[in-house]
Image (cartoon, rainbow, N blue to C red; front, side):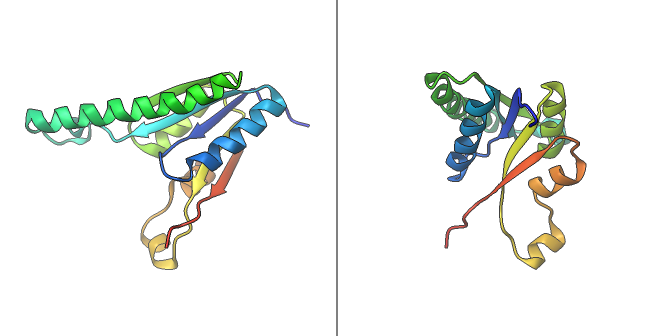
Length: 150
């Protein structure tokens, strides 16, 4: 059986995050692995070629990042309370590229992400993060399907 030392869990703060965490917890306990919770935040507007805009926009974005970091750290603390080695990472950039880069940098043995079920036309014009990761990654990928709300 293959051993797992580092499990990267890509978190998007949707309702399905509990399912991702349950899988990660079970695997981390079984293999005594470390969990890396990763959230990729939207890049700063000036990073993608736009002017940063008024100060209030920058302040709102900074508050959004602080909230995301607090939420991510709270999820990480849940693992730590169960004596599971875990760390939280909040980074900015393009989602797929940043997940792949962090997985490589952290020497992840497994990535866990959620996947949404979309119709034909959605998939025709837009690819999901999980599908892009599947196409580009050399690291095993566990995808957890998300139950869509009606």
